Structures are given as C-alpha cells and as structure tokens.
Image (cartoon, rainbow, N blue to C red; front, side, top):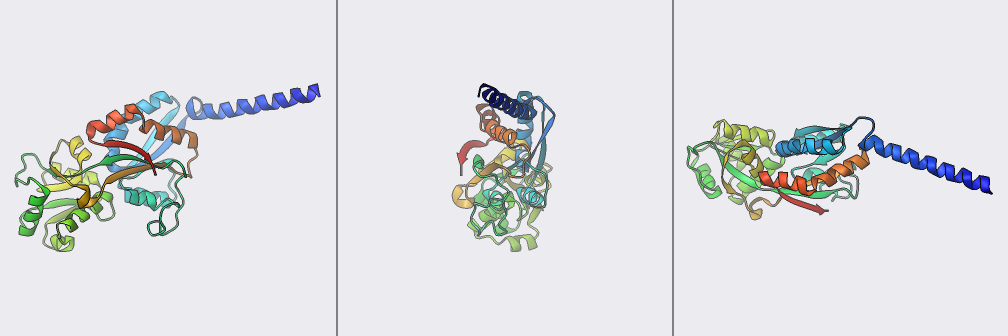
Length: 278
C-alpha cells in the first residue's frame, strides 16, 4: 500500500509539472504569437497597448490585423487564424456567435468561445471637417440642409462596414435617400473608417462621418456627434474565438483590455470603457 501511495503521489507531481510547463509556454517559455483581429478604428489605441502587454508576457508577440469589421468577419469565416476578435459593431460579432439570434447569424456560424464575449467600449459617430472648415458646416442639421441643397461633398463608409451602416441610419433619420445623394455626386465612400478619415484630413471632401476617436487621432475638428436616437449606440464587442490555439493567453489579453491601465489609454482618445458581458 505504501508503494502504491508513493506511485500515485509521483504521478500527481508529474502531472502538476506538465501543467505548469504548459502554462509557462503561454507566459514565459517558448515564443507565442497572439493574433488579434480588430476594427480599424482601434489601430492607434491597441498599438499603444501592445508594448505594455508584451512587457508583462516576455515570450508573447501580438500580431494585429486591423480592417473593417465586415472584412475581418469574412476572413475569420474563410478560415483565417485568429485568437481574439474585436468588432466596431455587435452585428459582425453576432454573425460569428452561435448564441446570437438566427435572424442575424443566418449562416449558423460558431466561432465565439462562449463565456468570453463582452462589450468592451463605446464610441461616438462624429461629423468631422477639414482644417479651417471651408464650407462652415456646424452640425448634423446643417449637413442635412446642405445635402438637400446639393452643395457639399460628404465622405462615408461603405454599406458593409459599421461606420457606413451608422451613417446610413443618420441619413435615414433626416429622411435623406442615400442612392439619390450618390447619383447627384454628393457622396464618396471608404472601405473602412481610416479611408474616410484620410479623405477629410486631405480636404478631398467637405466633411466626413467617422468615429470621434479617429477624428481625435487624426487631429480633425468634430462639429457634432450623433445621438443614440439617430444611429444607435456604437458598441465594440470583444471575444476569444473557439479556434484559438492559446485560450488562456487570449483570455489574459481580454482581461488586460479591461484593466485600469488600458482604460486610461482608451479614454484619452474618446472611448468609453464598458466591460459588460453579454
């Protein structure tokens, strides 16, 4: 019996060593690459936070893929390697979440690791103008009037990206027909919020509808922000994906993004940290 107990004890110790070794592989052993797909509007803030997380995890390198949420969702669906997904709208996350309504997740996709999804941040949809505001546009109300008059050029996101979808809601709020405005040559488009921001910064347009945080990062003047009644709340959900090869590390990364240190970085550019599970 004594030998049997010693044998059991040795097996338990060996298992513990294996588990601890696996943990070290995530935090202090072999090099690990954590792949994060994130909305383009998070480029500056997540890049700033990268060094802090990697300093706490010396063997970890974060690889970012920034693009429109719709493009990222399509890449994930098509088999791209990804550990963490952060979208600029619940829609794209819902389309990957088996727990979401089948009316949104129409393909029955199952990529979200259940229990990890949370509402990370809130942003604002801003009306931004080039330096000097040459056309003197001071509000969304004024924008609507000028679009009806046909004497300005507005940049907006494509219909398959969140910033474009929020803009469509704003146009509908003012009972403006996007198709008619486009035919009249009053609209230009961008495939993500960064492209729209660039058009405004270069004064290629008279104004653009972007996120408040992108306007801040680009040094643009914001003349108005949309209310929730106009386009809904701009919520950024985040989740670990169930295709991850580094679940523990991916969970650590999400926890880091909800830390006080990360909150400060997000708040500096105009995000409102949320951290609410959904």
